[in-house]
Image (tube, rainbow, N blue to C red; front, side, top):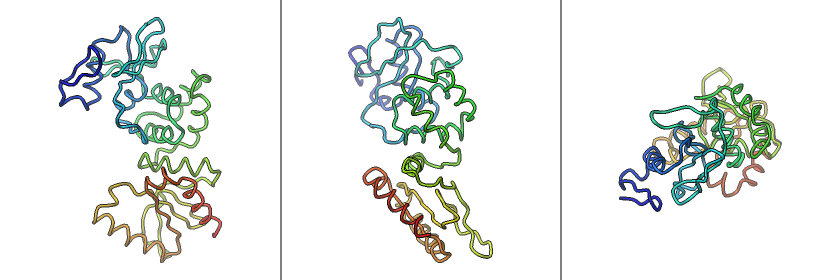
Length: 261
């Protein structure tokens, strides 16, 4: 058995599963407890980039009158949630997707929050629903961050780290790119689809995740890039090591490419 906290245990084989950890923690949680924040995001199938993978605490929102405290297996927030912000999955109560987004605005940096917002718009929420949620909680922790991020969100984003890269571009004051731009040559032959593009300047930016290290993918990437360059496009490719380790240089390289055109 894996010991989660002083009175909470779980079979070791299940200790990495968020639903199992949540079920175990709820056994000793007060009445009215709702899964929220990062835990609700995981239950909704949202990937939050830049998370500390070693932090497996479950996020719970408990009523204001509760005396529950955070401990080794749980991170506790106090709030009397309105019924419209709570839903149920099986026996578990959790915050709705829109309320989860509003809560995450208070605990995530803008880049990861944009990644979550992009995913929500693609699968779970409309922009109107997120605006309405922000309108119901227009002040307090995360409100300013939510207002900054929401106008930048785009359901076309295809990976969380691509969203983080796009936030760097936005935060640096660069022109907004076109997402998933289809590139064609002079006679209309399709050459490829770009993560971020500035068609007028003929500049493309790609985020290369781990899948691009696979041999077949790498070979196709090289062939595709050669066609794009031959067609007159500047192609910049960045990895997570670039976005996280040298963000200023990433922005500078994109800015130089845009100025050259």
